[in-house]
Length: 419
Image 1: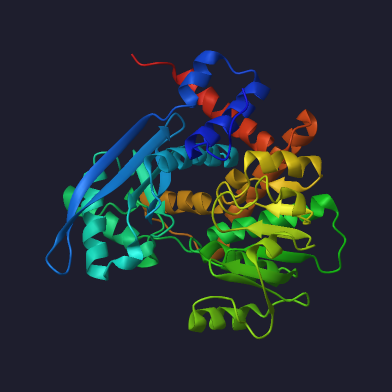
Image 2: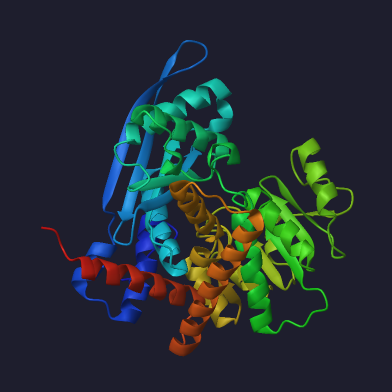
């Protein structure tokens, strides 16, 4: 029966991606049934007193997909779009992300349905501390370690760590990652995701023998990941010719002055209207004839309706689920090389792992050492996926999933079923 992907839930899409890998592996029905569902899901409803004295009840979630390979790991998202279905999908994605890069974590995700921009700092702190208290029965250094995601930042992580520490009676720095350096955070964590995207883009360009004198890049999304990716690719010698944010996009075929653009965006609230570039639409950006396209915004940006118009030779999928299953098939048939999300944006969780290790041993590394370790872990994973893709004659996403799912399946089988 045909699946209507346009109406399909995020979790159903995540299960579909898993099923594709399980089919390639010839996975047994018993193991498949365990891995295609989440282990546990917690929904909480909690009150927060606002600055005006009123009380509002918020809904939050924490979902653990699988913990066969170690503690659960995954971000916390504050957004009006947060739902249990989305959190379940992202928790499963985290399991495969940790698996493909070979770090000893399972996957989790959490969030609160809220617009953080509508809250004062005082209200945001109260919401965060109450939410942390509600999910405290699940989280901890050996159980489940949250991190920042959409709508959260190092300050939010510091509040959560402090809340867990107050409950414990001593500082539990390893209870979250993505914290400020002053309270046990790691050097290199802020730009880790963008740095990982950059490392993988450069490796893919070498593999593809793209001989442009200066390969061109278009980056969709100019948030934390997109901004650092654009800067790091520029520093690596590529020419960033287009970027976009939620309000518009700009293009200059000779290359963008990223420093001036960042200042313009800070002053104007968006990239549109930048004098040293031409305003274009987001659809135009995705169709530019560039060597590299980096979708670093939100999900489902490259889909059935526009996959045929993509002219990039390489896509590094910096945002989760930026390319739909339908678009995957079109791009693969057209010979577009794709570095999939579970590998492309794994830099953040790799350095989060480094932060957790540093907190547990109370011994911290310098940023240069962290970047070197990140480069080693993520490029090794890239070539493992590439080897699987070439040998099995499957696309890079399926290859990444096969490696990740196999590692989790092995751990699940060898541990057995309790009791």
